[in-house]
Amino acid sequence: MARFVMVHGAFGGAWVWGPVAEALEGGGHSVEAIDLPGAGDDPTPVAELTLDAYVDRLCAVLRERPEPAVLVANSMGGMVATQAAARCPEKVASMVYVAAFLPQDGESLIGLTQMPEGEGDQVQANLVVEGDPPVATMPAEASRDAIYGLCSDEVVDWAVARRGPQAVVPFTQPVQLEGFDFAGIPRSYVVCKQDRAIPPPLQRLMLERAGCSPVFELDTDHSPHLSRTAELAEILDGLAVTRSAAAP
Image 1 (spheres, rainbow, N blue to C red):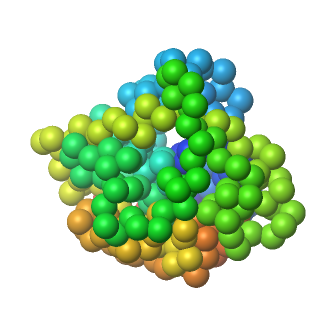
Image 2 (cartoon, rainbow, N blue to C red):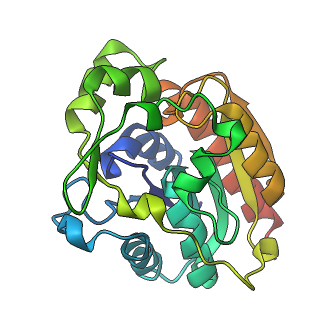
Image 3 (cartoon, rainbow, N blue to C red):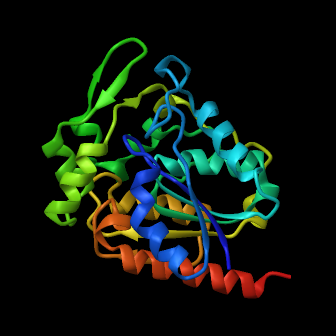
């Protein structure tokens, strides 16, 4: 059975992975869903929140156990996971991007959203940014539409109530991947066909540039871990079993 480490997106926390973690653990897998600094129950002050701080936290978690992990990332978590894989590759067995940003060297999250393929992004369109250092929030109704469009009302209410503010600085900081070759880390992608946060054309551009394989498609929103929990868990379980069997 596999060790999974799950990385949440902006405004989220470890809690977003609860339903999928339960399904995977029921199948015998080990699941570690982390709070990035300043997210969920983590008290890190906003002035200390950077992409590097996120990556340091993830690499620290990956190094807590001897075996490499299947690294699963949603949304902004794809930026964190990509940089972490380049910094502690010996702890990453494979990666799964779930409607996640997948940058190339020198790209930031904000830069990716500004590509033509990102047109229609309802997160950037509805952000409310205030403060110094800047912090972003999203109105509840905008979150419902952009992030949880196909979730049940009960799940939406549960998720919106747990969403927190998001530091803007990590959005602006590029990954540094120069000289790193991902050829030794299998990367898969789960495209969400009704995503209004990362439009499907942008998802497909990113996965094609990265050479992700296999690619899965779910006819759902930006949060398949909540809207299509069983289907996503089945994909993750299948990837873990297949790659474990193929490992030397």
